[in-house]
Structure formats: C-alpha cells, structure tokens
Length: 325
Picture 1: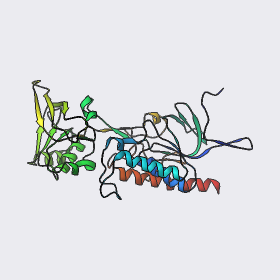
Picture 2: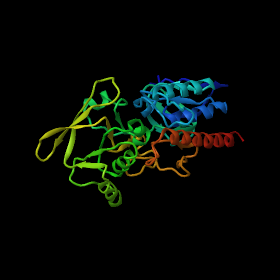
Picture 3: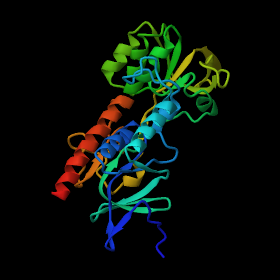
Picture 4: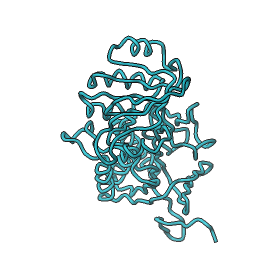
C-alpha cells in the first residue's frame, strides 16, 4: 500500500484529478493567494506549515497594515485571513511540505504524511529571522523584543533601544529608530561592521547612536508577559566583563533564513537560499510561482508579502485558464 495518504482529491471516471492549485505557507503571502484563488473558485489547497501563520505570530500588534488604524494583533490578523480564505472555499492541511517533484506534470507535493498532485503551485514559505539563541529573547518577543524595526519602531517612541547586529540591516534599523528613540545602542560582536561603508558612516556620525564593539547580549531583562523590557546584560568578548545597558526595547538584526531547504536542488536559489524569480513571482517551471519573504531579500513586510501573494494568484489564474482553453 502506498505510504502516502491521498486526500482532498477527486476521481472522475476512474482518472485522478489533480488539485487546481496548492499553496504552501500560511503567512500574509500564502493567505492572500488563497483568498484570491478561492474567490476565482479554484478551490485551492493551502498547506499551512506547522505552526501556521508565519512571523506575524511573533508580533503582538501590527500598526502598519492598511485598514487597521488602531492596529491589530498579529495572531488575530492571521486568523481573520484564514477565515476569509475558508469562506471562499480554500481548504487547509496543517502539515509541513517535505518534498516537491517538478519532473512531470501534474507536480507532486508531499507533506509529512500525505501526497498531492497539483496543476499549479504557489510557494509562500516565508523566512525566519535569525535569533540570538538565548531563552529571554523568546520570553519577551512581541512585548519588548522585535525582529522588525520598520514594523515596530513607532511603538517605542521616546524610549531607549538596543539593536543587535553589524550588517546593513542593523545600520538601516538603527538609523530608522532614531526617528522615534532618543538613544540607540548597537551591540556588535566584532570590532568593525560588515555593513557597506556609506551605511557605516551614517551610523557612526549620528549623535543618537552609540556602538558597543566586541560585545554580545547574554540576557534580556523584563517581567515576562508585561509590555517592554528594562535592559540587557552585555558581555565584552575581549575582557569578559559584563554590564547592564538600560533599554526599553531590543531589535535583533542579525539576518534572515528563507524557508527553502526542501527546495535545494529543485528550484533556482541564490547564495543565501532565496528563490530566484522572474517578474517577481515566476519560477523556471510552468505553473509554479513564488510569493513573499522566501524571494524578497529586502522589504520583508506583511503588506508587500500580501501583495506578492496576490500577484502569484493572478499569475496562477492566467496559467490555469490557459490549461483549460
């Protein structure tokens, strides 16, 4: 017996009928694609990943999503999008995709326990922020610790914050935060930045920004469950001495990892593992599209991911309509 359980499928006169479109990922990109393809009555199958929802689940309040002037909890936003997709006919499978076979059509998508055939696929698996690896960062994630200055910077208006990192993202985040925060302290584990020279100059010449070289964060202080943090414990990697830096916010800016490991050797990926696409959402395989942070190395916003999901859905619609023609 085949070890893979075939579900959410139909048979017509004994012939296997593939899914119209399978969407992989349930962040803003995947859910937007699901809403659009469902409204077109393609009955998309959405394989959510575990847990479902993407990085918005780490955000307590989203204030820059259009249509929510008072902000919205990240979890609630995802729940609303799921409800909207299901209302129009999207079906959810709460598993992880482990493999895709692009060698023949329909394409085969395999999860932890099932296998599906698909005429079109939208890959919206997103990316994960690299973390420090200390327990206290997750204890305060969304209540004082953030991985997105553009998303959360305005929430820290008038407060002192810490930025961890030394690349262009850390530089950009630090400069952006000076719009709201009187003092920004950059914690960097080396004695020089990896960022571009022009970004370094902007940061080092800004009187609101202080740099602590050869330093790592060992602990983030604050009352668990309460909004805001009170400070961070810093260790000097040269002298091994520690000190506490008073801060009400911590922004981690040490890079991102696209969720594309299962695609290595399957699709074209760049040197960092991001999917290489044409026209933003088109891959080298007919009917296979990409959307969101697994392709976007720059913006990484819920709104831009949602827009990419919509573009991928419209491309999928065009492709499926041509198949039927």
